[in-house]
Image (cartoon, rainbow, N blue to C red; front, side, top):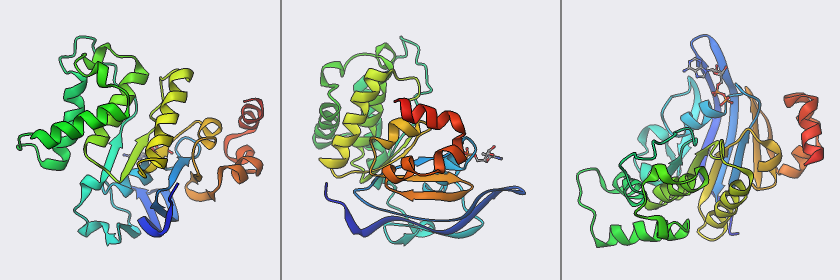
Length: 253
Ligand code: ADP
């Protein structure tokens, strides 16, 4: 893997964020570098989604600064560098009238603008994205006819169609069975190591994710931990943050 630790893609500096009077994030400083594969973990309500929204410019912290690719987020325009894979929360009707290829093509419009026709090069990029996630043979099927794991691969392909440098994933394996989860994580590792895409993944499953990523950032209002997964799992953090049951799960995996 070619992590370029010189190049900060996301710099979060001393940010604090409140919803009304309720402070949700307190003095968070976190740098994400090109080539990182990092998971945001922490107990429910710890502020993971809030931080993700801040990094995507959807909400603005009251205190602190965010820079993307070296630019203050308020002046940042190159949003096509970022891809997003949502939670697998949508239960498509099997007859939902959109094919796999059409879903992936939507990812291309983010790059080009909605009113542009997709040309031959775009079609090639869409084909390439389908191939990366091994869904070429399913391109003309309806999205609702696929398994949860396959649907998640299609959402990855949709993100890839925008040729992003960074992909955010929000608990992408919720509702995906264990075997498909393994394949899904193998795909993410491929994107990170072979395509050099920076990955930022929110996960509630500390034990599983800690075996996948190169870095953990644990949020519980403050940034409780940032570093290698190994040290986190060996440390006292699990009990403190998740209670006794978490340690039981970690030891019995
Ligand atoms: P996590 O993703 O770690 O579960 P969130 O960032 O979703 O945490 O939430 C952090 C805290 O902020 C929670 O207490 C949640 O109830 C609160 N919160 C989240 N979104 C809103 C909102 N739109 N308005 C008010 N409070 C919110």
